[in-house]
Structures are given as C-alpha cells and as structure tokens.
Image 1 (cartoon, helix red, strand yellow):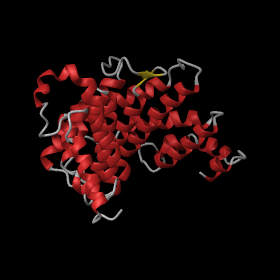
Image 2 (spheres, rainbow, N blue to C red):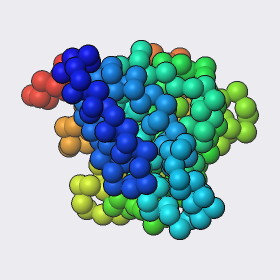
Image 3 (cartoon, rainbow, N blue to C red):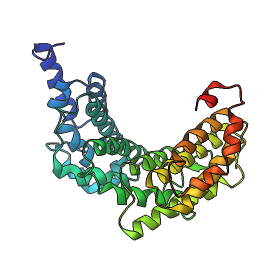
Image 4 (cartoon, rainbow, N blue to C red):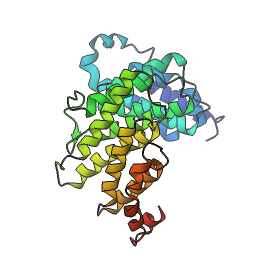
Length: 305
C-alpha cells in the first residue's frame, strides 16, 4: 500500500491506539504488526513510541504509570512488551535505518538493558545493540563494560546469572554467543580491570572445553561449541593476548582431528584467521601436517577451506 493511501493512515492510527493502550496483549500484537510490515512509514510513525516501550515498559501517556511503583508484581506483563519492542526496533533498523532516528538521550538506558534479569529482554537487547553499534559505535561504546560484566556473571565458576536457565548444562548459551559477538565490534578494553575480567571469561570458556562432556546429547556439545567458537573468534579479534591465542590454536588443533566434519570445517576456518596473528604463528605451524591431511578427506567443504 502506498503511504498516501487513506487505508495505510488508518492502519497506523489503529496500531498507535493499541500501543498506547493498557493491555499488554494489544501492545505486543501491535509491535508484531509493525515489525511484519517493517517499511519506511512504520519506522517514521513509531520512531518515538517504540523506544519508550523498550526503556520503560510503558507508554509515556499511559494511565498506568503508577504501576512502576509495583514493578516487581507486573514483571511478567512488562518483560514480553520490552522484548517485543527490542525485536521490533531491530526489524525497523534493518529495513529502514535512515527513517529510524533514536534519541541520544535513550542510549544509556538501551545499553542498560544488558543487565535486565529477563533472559528474553537481555537477549533481544544484545541483538538490537549489536545492530546499533555497527551504525554508530562511538555512541554505544558504553556497552563494552556491561557486556563483559554480564558475560562474567554467566560463564565464570561462581556465576550468579540465569542459574535456573541452562540448555543441556550450558548456561544461557545464546546470550553468551551474542555478548561475545557484540564485543567483537570494539578493540580490547582499555580499562585493565575490564580487560582482566574479559580474559578470565575467555580463559574459563577454554577450560570448560577441556572438561568431559556432561551429556551424550548432541544439543550439549553444540551449545558448548557455539560458545567456544565465538570466544575463539573474539580472541582472534583482540589479537593481543599471546597465551589465549596459543590456547585457542591448540583447541582448534584438537577439533581438526575430530571425526565430526562440521567441527573440522569450523576449526579450519578459525585457524585461517589465527594464522595471521604474529603471536600464534608458531602454534599454527604445529598443526600444519593435520591441515595438509585434511586435503585428502573426500569432503569438498573441508578441502576448499
């Protein structure tokens, strides 16, 4: 439908009425409708309302602002709205980035969503922030410290986050992967304490990879390896910690000898990136024979890599 059509304007007005309603079900359905349409007109029309839902859980003019005093009692209602708002903004950002103008006053509050206690809100917020960072890294550089802090609370031995949510013995694997990817948008942290905490996280992930599998289910190994490979990608991106680079190389060397074709392929792909680092050059050479043997495997994806 053309933006000048009366029908389109009526649709936008009805969606706005639902977004400004008291009913979280109506709000969620309205956000999903905006995301499904996802065009320039939707981005322009709701560039203010949706971010307000994301950072507050309520619309600015909502008659239920007093509920903020009883936030804990209504968390089950607010969190799905915030999650839908983050995903809706992500959709609009991908389809019409030039039409979605976020107020810079909201930046800090959007970044703070990384600390949200609801897994869905935190995960969707990381995806949104990762997209916004690629557009304006300087404005969102404050996310680095929070991302490292959140990652540390999940993966370290004394983790306190999401203890009640593990996927086949791996705590919040999708959130961990997204946090590790987010950190790859920036250079290593300048703050020594933040960098030390990040190195501890990466070291912990590498250590867990050496532990025996806690389950024979493929879901367990897939989740654990997803976090591990993203951690290795971050180590390669940072390219400043020689001990971590060498350990990552040795871990990839073990995967090169694995019977699982997908693991060998991913290991070869990461090894190619690792070979460019001066810190791990000698470590990569130790696995040269294994890489050459991969050429004899009659699987084209491995050979071509």
